[in-house]
Image (cartoon, rainbow, N blue to C red; front, side, top):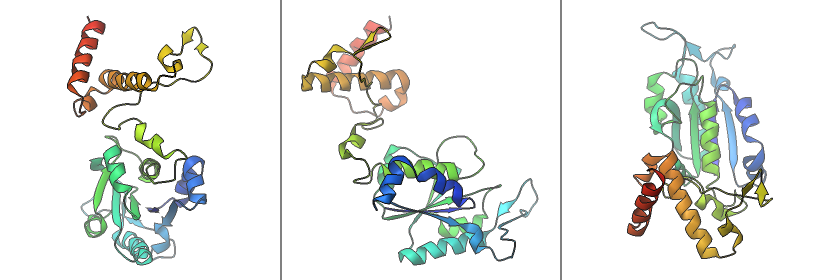
Amino acid sequence: MNFHILTLFPEMVRDGLNTSIIGRAVSAGLLSIEAVNIRDYAFNKHQSVDDYPYGGGAGMLMQAEPVYLAHQAVAEKTGGRPRTVYLSPQGHVFDQKMAEELAQEEDLILLCGHYEGIDERVLEEIVTDYVSIGDYVLTGGELPAMVMVDAISRLVPGVLHNDVSAEFESFQDNLLEYPQYSRPEEWHGKKVPPVLLSGHHANIEKWRREQSIIRTYERRPDLLERCELTEKEQKWLRQWIEEHED
């Protein structure tokens, strides 16, 4: 999969994405991450890409033409018009379902705004998706872009050494991941749940499913409302609630 990040701070993106799992995947040729410097497409010797907004107001606005030219350069390179995401607090909130959808793209452009935003006219012309990573305001789109690259990349075949691990992490089936334990068997007086030491795989999977349901109920009940529990699991959860919340 190929990521093309349009930004005023390419070094920030490169430094943030060249380590750990993502960095190894790039080295292995499983991913391509290109940081395109929008300033390279400015039409003045100072590489200025911002100006005052019409109508007044605080701050500066990124101009349309440099953003458009940077986008066109990527489009020409890919031979089409790749899906283009503008990172904005006004967009749809990024979640695992969206990550799974975007992971199907061969090329994905992530447009990072800065200052007070970007001239609306170029957004209307090139943007296909408006995406937010949360209901708060950041100084630019670089951090959200890196968050998206990380989440999407994990779903690209071969990026994780154990390809099935992505299937059992938090938010799969709208359930949070179950608690996990490693050696030693006892730490600070706390022991590993005996079922995990039993070697009985069916019982372990049952315990993990139940723990995921409990954890989601306690920490993210909004997700549980969208989870498809069996009638048996629903009955078990009601009983668990009665026993633990009296």
